[in-house]
Image (cartoon, rainbow, N blue to C red; front, side):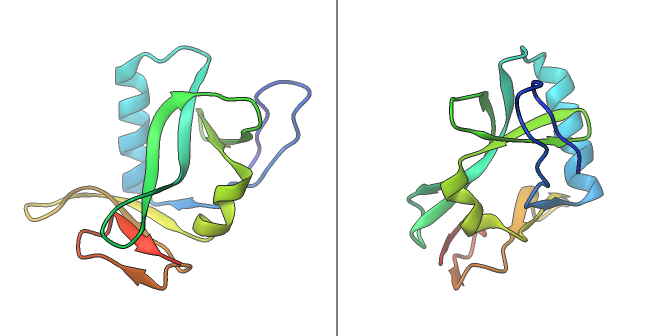
Length: 121
């Protein structure tokens, strides 16, 4: 996938896959939020959750040291240290009666919780 946030950055292939439903929802959110040029979709992990680590998927300010990607019209950033936890992961958007929200299918997770929002590696 092609990316360039500014002319000094290199192109990077996004290490996470998004389903069509997830892309549609992210495009809707990106449009509705009217974000400034200093914001991007941040993908990563953080400590916490019932299995030890939680997924991070949020619009955030771009920080120094971020690796830059592009998902259609949406700029995406990640910390290099987070890639090993999410490489190959698929993000979906579920909008059924029982589940609503983003779900994460992570082949790197050795254990996940019932809610699907946290994992251990």
